[in-house]
Length: 233
Image (cartoon, rainbow, N blue to C red; front, side):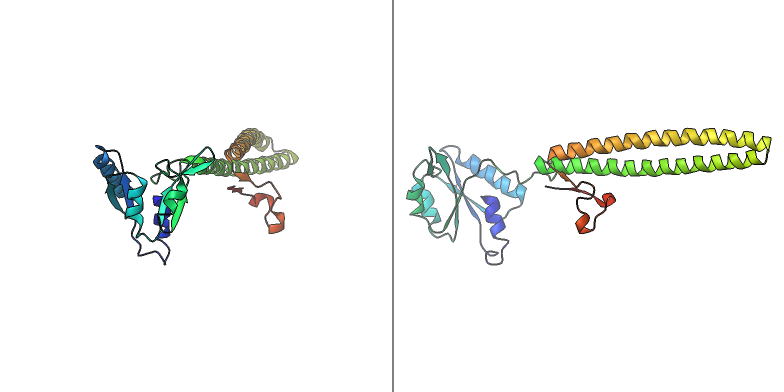
């Protein structure tokens, strides 16, 4: 509810509105609750006034809220009926309040949560991993292509040396051919491993909930297979 009230003040029609939070608690623990709430407001950096309520009941809430422009009120569902925070019929409290927004919250919202937390964070990390592995695979593929071209060039050099019957040159180039072939095979294996890791990362991203564009999926929009990118759902 605090977040909803804060977001409302971001609108030009409500930018001068003041947020007041009624801090209700049991006898003997009210000051502790007030202190906790005040500290919380400082931590999340939302400008609001915390007010101590001695008697936590519908009558007191109605008295404190009668002059408010808008009231945010939590409610609960019990046996298919809506009840106020004190367990009474919500209709009884509504009749005593001005404009009201009823909020049914399944769980508390962590205003300090980092962007990396939760489902969105899981998807973001999976996409980051996919992006990293894809870059490594692309680099490995280019290296493999380069090594293959160098091997082909060495084979051509060997053919020329053999045609000239230059024994010394042939022996030298043969050694270079063997080295180039070994390097090409090594680069090819590395590229294959990188490609496998990329496919695994894509599967993990899909499991996390990300949508991975298939090759040609966005062809009508002008994308090519190389332009296909992972997308959030």
